[in-house]
Length: 178
Image 1 (cartoon, helix red, strand yellow):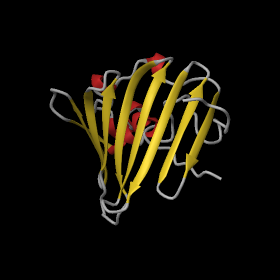
Image 2: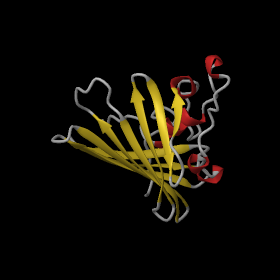
Image 3: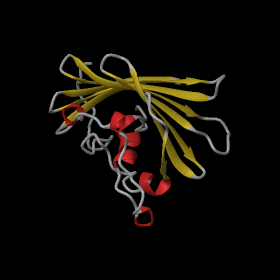
Image 4: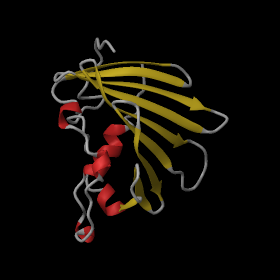
């Protein structure tokens, strides 16, 4: 049985797209333009997933009814004590965008998760740094000053998913060709 943790774009972008909490009414919780995804590149409708893993690596693909595919690969670096997660989001044969996330797995009291976002041509367009104490995310778009999003923005829809709610329960195992 493959154990899969939902990470990457679904969680990070769900956090960014959340509406502000009541205490943050005066704060702009919208993600910067560099993180706004073309809606046609978001997986919607029925989906299937196929994943394989071993002690330190996993690979898989989620296929959605609208033609979007999300290919994922993760690996554990036991020396650096970090998990590296890469995702490529495609529609047909066209790469929409990709992400590369580094998640610390050590005993650091306030580990920061760094995610890099690349456009379809592979150019870096944004970097996010998610910290837990206090909960906040710093978003840096290419050529623009960093933007800090407080926890009140991030918690608003943390359980939501940009991929049409697809998760391990809603997206069963099946044939999904990368």
